[in-house]
Structure formats: C-alpha cells, structure tokens
Length: 171
Image: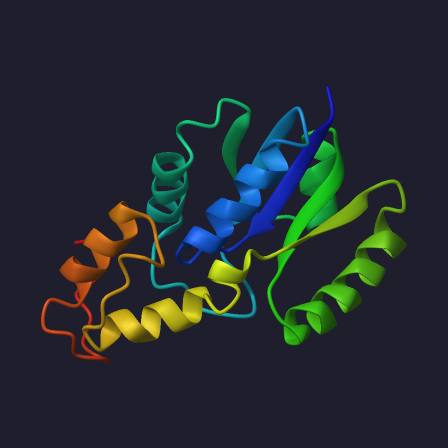
C-alpha cells in the first residue's frame, strides 16, 4: 500500500485544499492529512481540534483519507506513517518559492521521501486560508471558498463582520 501525507496548518481548510487532497486520494492507496498542532510561522485562529473536525467533515466520503495531528518534523511524521511521498498544493509563484526551499531541506533530512506537487485547479488558484479569514472577518461571504462547516463557524466567530473582535473559537 502506497501512503502519502498532505501536511499543513489548515487554518482553516479551504475548498482548494479539499480539491488537492481528493485528487491525491485518487493517486495513492492512503492519504494521511497531517495537521500541524502549533505552526511556528503563524498563530492559528482555529484550535487543532476544530481544524481536524473541519477536515474530517469535508473529506468523510474519501475512504482512503485519514487525519492526524503532528508536532514533529514533517519527514518524521511521514516516516511514522510509512509514507513515501508528501503531497503539496501549488497555487502561485510565491508558493513555489517557499516549497522549493522546503523541498531541499526535507530532501537533506529524508532523501527517501519524495514530494509531489499538485497544481491548484484554476477555480481555487486565488484561495488562501489567510485571505478567507480576512474576508470573513469583514463579514464577506466565503461559502464558495470553504467547506460548509467552516463557513458556519466563521458566521459564529464574526457575527457582525467586525475584524479584530472575533468571538473565541473555543466558545
């Protein structure tokens, strides 16, 4: 059985993420979505439990996809799941620049783990988690950009569409 991981913060998962994961699920026998518990490069809006629940809800129909949380090096997470491949989505040139650096670092640490890049569908090439959070914080409609559960949660967090005054995600 060939296993791949799809690591990310998923804060929150977008329809672009779901598209990439479903396409990868058609290629590999098993996909393990790795949710970074506490990303070092950004503070998350949603708790790790919420991010996992959003992913499980959005991908429940994909029988070969599981979600797990990790706090170690991504290559160690891949090894823990006997994954031979990391799947990453690419939307724009800036994604490529970041992923190019990460690929070389990961190959230095684990040359046996390959990275497969899946180009974003044009429909989602402009969608980012940070962009979706900003739109939602101003009361903008994000229903077509994120799974339904995420859109509902944004409505709860930003009932008045006021940035800077969110309701705590854990409430």
